Image 1 (cartoon, rainbow, N blue to C red):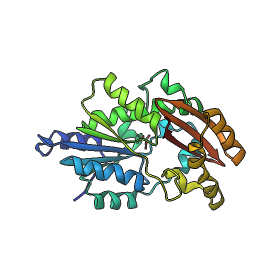
Image 2: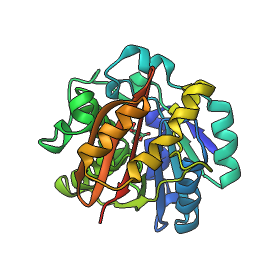
Image 3: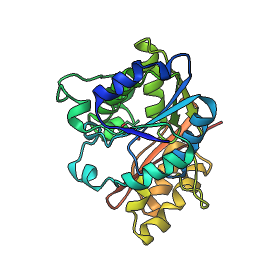
Image 4: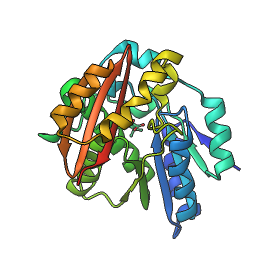
Length: 255
Ligand code: PAF
């Protein structure tokens, strides 16, 4: 049966108990509102490890806009049901005061990558992401940690942070899961109106269309997207666009 742990001290006691000794532990950090994209990570995590834990924590320090934080969908009841059905053993569901007893006096800052792409448009975003992920990794001490490739820049930054701080977990990148029309699954898709969702479906196709990153950005603008960036990096074409209040990101392999 799934166990939900909200108190950090309870989790630390549990983690030191015999239950975890000599057993592989898989971890999926999330902000909840689980969808098929998260499920693909969670199912792999459960299949490849003897024990599995997910965290559900909408991390305020990674939001640069209060309105974005407030609009972030919260669906804890459904999330717990989905996690249980997928075979998750533990859910960490801490309050802000539990995870940030320092009230964010201490943070992890990377440069230069965290200042590029999404970081250039969301000041402080990756400081918040890296700080919360470091806290979670130190608490969970997982054998393997599963990260989605949709947030490709995030995956690179976390992979490199694990190496930089000698953390003993293997970061496993997992492929993007897409809707039937190709749109990458994201909790933010829920915030799109039917009309916005129609426009969003053009995002992956336009991203894949031949040409330079600059040409792709131009095509996206012409189609009606507000473009934050389209850039080639690390063998990928990374892009972020806005439709109304909703920001979408995606990336594809570039030859
Ligand atoms: O990708 C996310 O959902 C978040 O950025 C993460 C990794 C859970 C940190 O809050």
